[in-house]
Length: 422
Image 1 (cartoon, rainbow, N blue to C red):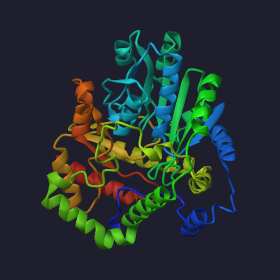
Image 2 (image 1 turned 180 degrees about the vertical axis):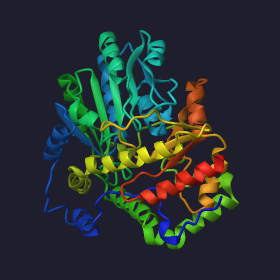
Image 3 (image 1 turned 120 degrees about the horizontal axis):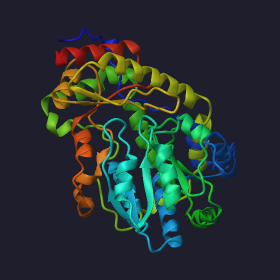
């Protein structure tokens, strides 16, 4: 089946939702933000209020939070080294564990929500386990309370990776305890987006003192780094501009996908070129800039929850329209306000052919979500046989849910998928 997709129906798979005003940027860089509206203490106060935490510390990158937390937990517990985590994440999270002095222990995930199950964790935990990194994906795990209670009893730390979970009501109403830490991301593709940024949420006074000592030693942000990240952001804004995407970029994308699929299937990968870091990259040890703080502040409002409601509504359409297709595996049925659906992933047989079919019919989607770090050569000595992670990575197709994406397009995508499997 070929769709009757019009030029006006063509939309990019993803859009950025930050406020990247050029005037603010130039003022921040060259006038050093003489009109500062927010400083670190004010934004941290706002973050801890919105995300219900005793303390909050803002960061230049979310990933540096993993390094700082694990490094200080190892100081308190030097006899324990193992950090259990899902390998379905950005590769630099694994790097942060290693550079902090920890040993990453990869475990498998569920197909129903992509998270680690309590049963899997219990099997992996031993006397050397220092902490668990629990990554939240599109929907809240129904085992998170079981996991937290179990780790409390075992006196094992929990680090929750909430990079794509910022709009969830779970963060709004659920306060981290003394042995729990949360990391937020304010990167370009997130609910609260800046050129880069993150935050640590915590309640542990002793660890807070150690973290504050580390943060006090950070260097001033490099103007060259800020400018380079701003230029990268402008490129993404340009590529996702609806007019330019319809007029030019989609047709280049379509040609590359259909003519050279194996080479360009994952074009748009926002986590390319995996590297095993020997030392912590210099820019990671810099403070967050006033420019980043001001962008984050502008987005830290009720809009993040409004956006999430729209995404959940879009995800529900996909679920209802596709649930009867036997060759698809969908996330478990869940559309609560604790879910986020930054996009809608499906697991499909004949994934690559379906992807090409949708592109051929002028609907942009992606085969990339996170990397399977368990299969990367740079982490070879930590690799294990993890069937579900491998299956998800090889069969995932990511469909758009962002607020501006038309419901008509969602219904057309579902119609095409049904016709493909018919």
